[in-house]
Length: 366
Image (tube, rainbow, N blue to C red; front, side):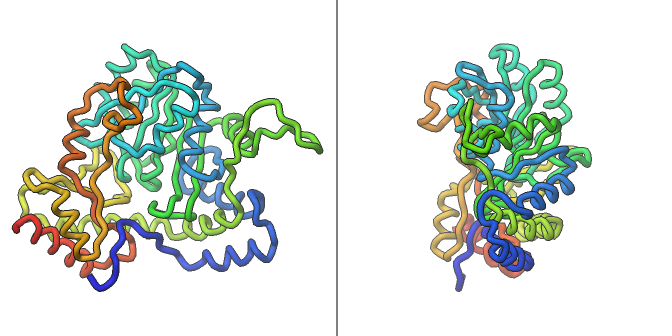
């Protein structure tokens, strides 16, 4: 390829420079200003969430969800094992104990293993990841958590715009989180959002995100807080990005279909499925090989200046979590060993996808 093809680079919508200019002209650069409020309202309007607070990262949002949800030292927290470290590291911030749950055929969390783990572990909470922009089996998972009294936190960092039964991921549990990291479907360069059904939860998180300052003219503190608030500058970028989110979702889905059409005759390739009643945002196009070593394909793509990645290495396989309990494990381990993420940036056109697919085909057939 003449130009480096990245896995999922930012794609600006057009209004972002104007909004950032407004921020500079107002001099409200810090974590306060109209664009922080506008960004929160835009996410609430799009997702149907009741309340939202803009934060420095999705990881910060998960941490605040655990903190506001009452997770403390020694509590057990269940989590999807097939995910990114940011989904589960906040469990350690709270000195709680992670317990990992394997995937099923959907690649997302297995509800049957979830039930087994709840019965044995008596957890305080579940952090459920919607993987690669695809919704988990929410009807079953929500019912299990409600019946067992388990706090549900949805890690929708990768799935903004994905739905289950017409409802947005991130809005089923007591808390949901979104990420606006540089590689997400929309970006603020770095940032996140915590959403929730209860106003008091989000107001508590808002207070904790600004060093838990009490209402006084001086700086008064009675509990530990954090420097987690999003800046007005980044929020201005987010407002512009929200304006083009529907277009980005449709383009991501189109890119997936282009790849599938280009490689449909290769029998050993399988694609990440969409569960019944759901519609994903196809944040990344992901596949598995039955026989081919995906790391050979990654090497072939890299030699042509094309970035690709293996699927997530499961958390129960990470040295950091050595000794942690896990339910299942074989499914996600196989996915990690056999899977690949293909370039999925929304600036790609069909010709680009066909060129990348040709490199994949040559690597398989060589």
